[in-house]
Figure 1 (cartoon, rainbow, N blue to C red):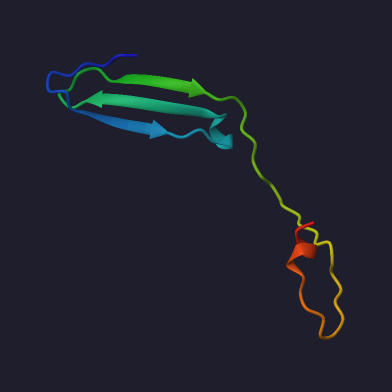
Figure 2 (cartoon, rainbow, N blue to C red):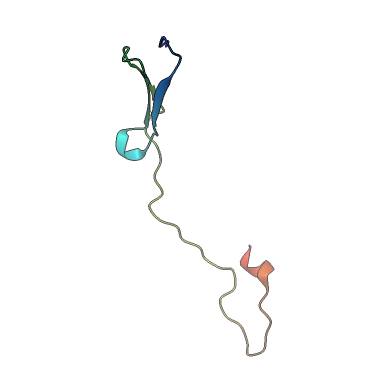
Length: 75
């Protein structure tokens, strides 16, 4: 892709890929001198979207006075 401007000034806009746009990133370069804009689209394919997260601690019950063991939670 090439875009040319007589003054080498341009506006660049980038649309990020997301699950809602089908995983497409769009890059648009618009010359400041009114020349023709160039657009490039990159298709990353379907993107995964995190819909939930479940964390289950290894130890859920402690005796009165028992110290919290962080190592138990990391298993």
